[in-house]
Amino acid sequence: MPHKINFDFAQIPAGTNLKLSEIGMLSSKIEDIDASILNWLKEDLELSATTNEGWKPVPIFWQTPERAFQVKNRKELRDESGSIILPVVSVERTGITKDPTRKGGFQAHLYSEDKNGRTGRMILAKQIVQDKTRNFAVANNIRSNNFTGGDNQQYYPRTNKKIVVRTLSIPIPVYINVDYKITLKTEYQQQMNEMLTPFMTRTGQINSFVLRRNGHLYEVFIDQGFTHNNNINNLGEDLRMFTTEITFKVLGYLIGEGENDDRPIVRVDENIVEISYPRESTLKKDEDGFYTITS
Image (cartoon, rainbow, N blue to C red; front, side, top):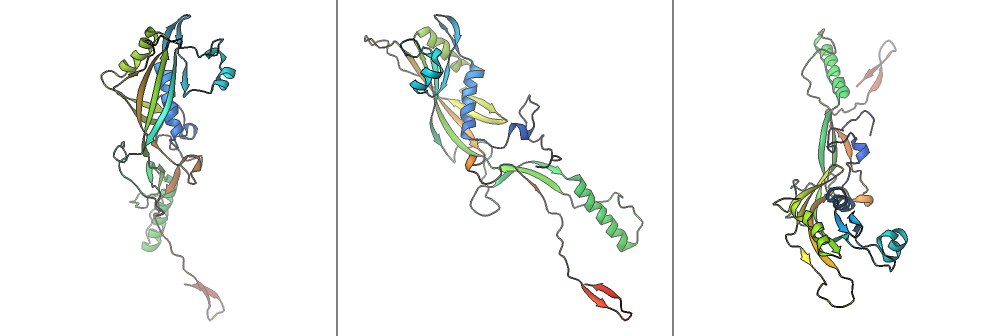
């Protein structure tokens, strides 16, 4: 993309001074939706609970790491016997559904102009190419003066219908429904109450909120049921544990085909304002022996 092309006004996350080329508002992948959920839990919710060592942040895992890996790399998360120290929160993606009846703001389906059955593109921004548009206006002025014998200047204001417009386009968004299961595990009832309350009260009287990542917006719907699975009535020697599962359904979208995409995500095009057909010319010798060019 040439350095003179500036589409920074197209879509920039609020509160940042980044450019499109820097933030990469070029694609939306499954990993982006996963990361937005994880970042919301870590940076927005910031769960903490009362422990034997005081008020401490609760570790959050993407799924559950392998025991061998965790013992070597996160030793502080397990005790001397190798058991994980509670409380903890784990996030798991449980399913993806592509439901055509459940879509977001972009409802229509567009086909590619190549007529190969692939998805089309949506225009994000338009920009008039001033230098090329001016060149067409000047050429029309000069041509008009030659035909009519006028004395207007080549930059004389006139109506110009040959407007060159540069457009920025990306593939249309493909909406998917992604299901997540968030599991809270604690050793005491008080810890569970402290961790569970923000999930119920953060969104107020509704069970939905919006995730933001790199200019993308994903809608989240929290299932109204919070499933409890406790073993406090078990008189065995197992570790006392309180478990609560919370289900999230995210209405997200994918832009592009990820690493397997053979087409550019962002494409810059200019419209056609004039079509010229070249004509072949021949040389003709006149009576004086001079050659003239004829069409």
